[in-house]
Image (cartoon, rainbow, N blue to C red; front, side, top):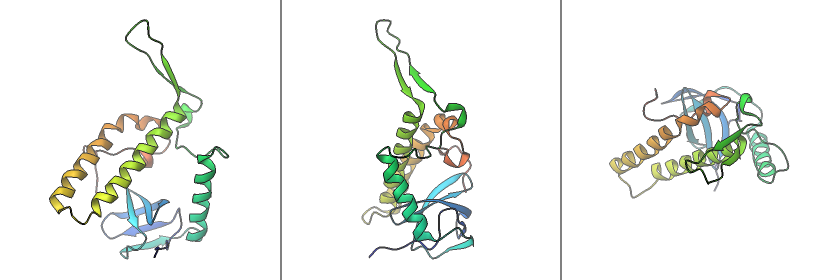
Length: 176
């Protein structure tokens, strides 16, 4: 049986452990919540998160999110890639060290979409580790450390994002 969201995207919530945050998306049966300097997936069923300020009907928000994701995946609409305005229309050029080799140009929005895909896959991996029944707490913490270091390796690309809430956060960053 699926759990349904109680709060809509854009809602301001108070989490028992992470404090105040804003719901920025849905991911399966999870809210994606932006807390101060950190983004967390919180299960819809989590009871220790309270609404501070609501935004629309959660089911309508979820439906809008899914439709926009599908239309964006098929190129029917331009979805928000979180790209900073100064990079719109820009190109990432990779110049080889070997003179007889051609350079490679990649549109920055395509590159950012791939980075966001990596981020989403790391989030899914993080949830699978945290919810894995046969891993003990020490193994979960060890694997979580690798994921955190992966995020840290990606912080160089934070300059591409329009909002700090989209930034990659590694172990060297301030976290609650």
